[in-house]
Length: 238
Image (cartoon, rainbow, N blue to C red; front, top):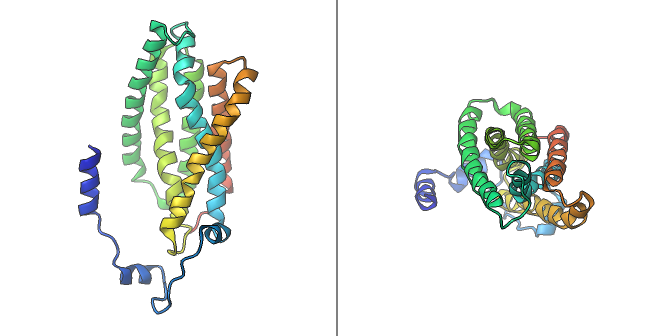
């Protein structure tokens, strides 16, 4: 599937030729384009780059803690076991696999809906997606019903679509056409670094909450809520 969709993209997507690209971004083609270092790129990054990175920090910690602790939380709350070698824990892991397939479908359907929204409402829908994600996390962390957990992951699908699309869209609207690829590459740090921070912090937090996987998800919920509110600080370009 990955190979087929990649090939479709390669052969079907039409890129700007250099002259059209320069005209679109009002670039002077008579001047030699400088190739700044990554450090210089970071120093001159648009304001939205850093503001979106703050949102990413909290939202990706929320996602990582869901990935890491959802199975254990459901095993405890629904199958009444904390033993990873038990049949109940295995059942929780299998059910989480079903939930991930379910949220992928939900994300696809939400994407079709989002495609009909207005471009000047990105911040609104970014917040909506993060809050939907937060609600799903708190439900999965506390529910005693596997079916409620499954339905809650429809909201997680909305959040997953949002987190993997809107930050990049909002960043590119804030760039001037120069070094776009480099900035998008650097922005991926805002996806990886929060997970590293969250992982290292878990060595301290997990014992503090009594090694409760549900509590770790609740902390992820709090992080996601902060991320949802922090969208307000983003100054998106036009």
